[in-house]
Image (tube, rainbow, N blue to C red; front, side):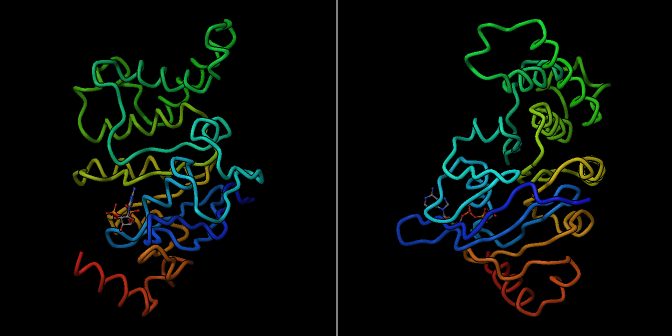
Length: 251
Ligand SMILES: Nc1ncnc2c1ncn2[C@@H]1O[C@H](COP(=O)(O)OP(=O)(O)OP(=O)(O)O)[C@@H](O)[C@H]1O
């Protein structure tokens, strides 16, 4: 059965006089992909930063698995089960694919415990890394130098590094950016395969991918949610068509 893993209520972020995110309420459910779309400057990245703890909200609250995490640091939120990938690749290019994933798995260990790495902690990190490598379909690339991998493989690696922290919730910021058709299809398949065990929020400009992947679609314009619901209903909404497409023309 689906369950809410992450909830935002009345989330607002002001930068001076600008409300970059204005009273946004949304739920992320395990087993569902929730896509957030909107023209440039709509507030999608700011919303993602508020959910991950990279920004503190001006107003509103966020809860993860029923626990209020408003104002927590990104590291603490990550340890609590939220994984986030960034628009720009975050990998260590000279290291191998495996080493990158292994480092990400280790980052899950609290700082204080890293000096006292017991054999069981090392084994747990190795297990998480192994599982993430497999989930992301990167077994064949295990020993490749990350920086020498294709753009698509680097984005896959980033997802694997996020998975290595064992998240319940995944926030994915434009995972298909800069990909060719074949790479994009591989990423779509990967995201679909991760849906069952995760609650996922996807910020993406590739509309074909959005309509293939999304179970729920939210449209933002000027910091506000103008529509949210089943993708077919949202697509047919005249407000979305005029506001979103109208704004996109001027983006
Ligand atoms: N740190 C900041 N200081 C001031 N204004 C900001 C800051 N970050 C974002 N903004 C403004 O907030 C608004 C929303 O920006 P945001 O990057 O969240 O939009 P977006 O929907 O992610 O856009 P894009 O699709 O281009 O990534 C924009 O007007 C932007 O200029």
